[in-house]
Length: 378
Image (cartoon, rainbow, N blue to C red; front, side):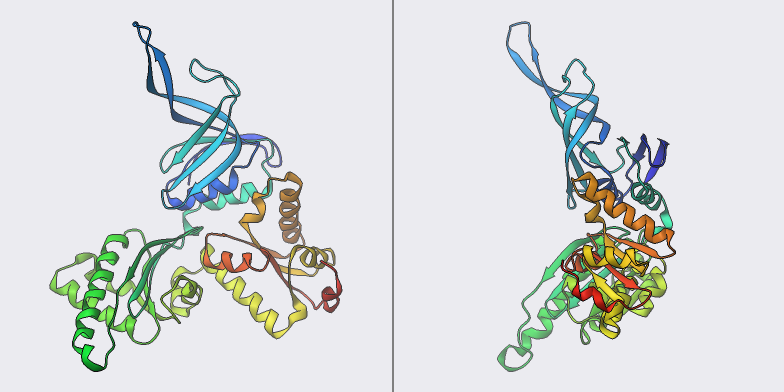
């Protein structure tokens, strides 16, 4: 995210002019823009003009509008934000109070104004403008007859391609078609690999599968890259990593990100920290269950007793339309940090965030056991 201009007071009002450079930035903006905020951007609106003959003709006019936000929609596949709200400044084409939808796309600047820039908003803005926070990882998840190509950013996991093929049995009368079917499947995965993985952008590409599927595809990839002189692959073959996974489905992504050789590459990126924190939480829940808890009530009681060492919370909880509810979670994150703990805000568009969401979206690793938490009514 390119921050063009900041003009706000922490825990006060003000505005920020920003330009989203990648899909992750639009997700950050989606979480920043809340009902009641104001957004100003250049837009196109269809207006009716009266011709000399008296007839009315529709014309698309480019203009700058500022709207008070009513709701925000995020289109991951189209990489666009749709912000619906009421116009706040009258001009010749749009009256005050008229509804309009602004579409924010990549490389289009906009100005976001808030009455309250709280600590969570400021942290999200700071993280979005930090290029070192990106994971920039491509993952090919495979099994026989199925492959997913995923791009993992600092806030988003995007499925770029899904390849399916019917693979005949290796035994019996259809054995002759087995090798042919697999070769065609690998060719299709290779083509998707070339279409969606750019080594100028990603740090590395991970090929993961159960069994030997990953090894066979990697061999196919290397042979074809030599035969067809695919420079993108030949020059970056050292950045292609093989990892075991239990399946070719997206839910296996967390174990891929948790693999030591992948962790060494993505290091302290946001995606890596989320995976590590969730792994530590589940380990604690299994080995010392009185030092782990989840659910708003249990976590808040644990925090009141100064017991929270690590807070795990999804960004979705900060999107509450109720200001008091959002402020409650913002204050929780801040006070956990102030008391010497750590707070990890998970992206609900990452596989680890999806997993945390299944546990109410909030959990904690505790400094010391609290066995009586189980007796508290939710």
